[in-house]
Image 1 (tube, helix red, strand yellow):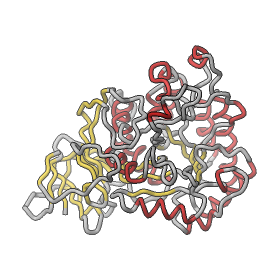
Image 2 (cartoon, helix red, strand yellow):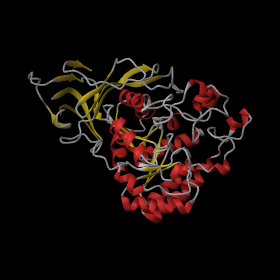
Image 3 (spheres, helix red, strand yellow):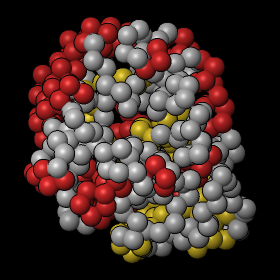
Image 4 (cartoon, helix red, strand yellow):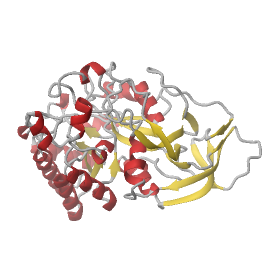
Length: 443
């Protein structure tokens, strides 16, 4: 049994913060109780969380661990280590590996490796065979093999009729379908917003209409089919309006936003170059403010990192040739605290709702809750601590936030009642986080 004393316990379901102690049953992997408990010497470990927040472990429904096939960027173990260091206890891996996760064998590989990490690593499967957008995978067989959901993330699905068939089947299977919304017909240079900054750089870039058009199409197909559909990494205010309208009409449409999209704008490319290149691109300040408003009013349901590791050599290529994407697992919570909670856009319980409860709801997971009997998956963090972003547990370091000072520091990540990350653990590329030994610990 593990006792967490003196913490500020966040309940995202009730949107409450209370000064409580928490007892975890590591043998059963559940929260045994929340209230007031004496340290009577019978606990295997005691954490003094005075001044700290105790919340459900974070859930990220959009990560790229590059395994199998691209493990020089990341693998399941280094990715899980980065997740644990960021406060995440559950992640959903995207399926655009090499080979892609379009068959039960590859799916089982990801799941089996994930079970060795100490956190919950779930695997999505592709919507189309080979991510070619022409033929649906055997979605029932993939669900039976353990797929958490379906996505061709990284590649938009351009055949509307195939999307409709995929949504119809996903509805029958009661599985979420996550969609990358960028029509390549409108894009000349991906990863950079078509606007004033791309003009200064002498390139055309990726206009918002590329995202808006597919988001609007898929919101209406979702309304027609009744499927549970997640619009991934939303970046455009007009795509956001499409989601808002679809929700109002009764569609089971969800939307996710990344920390980099609610924090940065297109101008970051001038400062950070390829480290600020991603799909969809960083857009205007007007778009950024619309995304924050969407988080506040509930149009955007969840925050996901789109953790996308790349090597230093790849990101050193010219802007139009370098791959898109940045890592995000180890900075997401701090960016949420710095950019959303501190300015007053969201409360702490609302942030935890976006980062733990709602992502779990999208995938019908039991985690993300803070109550007796719920999974003993928790994060303990100091929301007032100031830190400078430096080393990463991820194998890659492609982040525009390196060197930036942010609020919030993860002190402990606990999964299944076991400590899988403790602040001060040095990043070790290739290692997964280890469980802690019984001790008296200070947060």
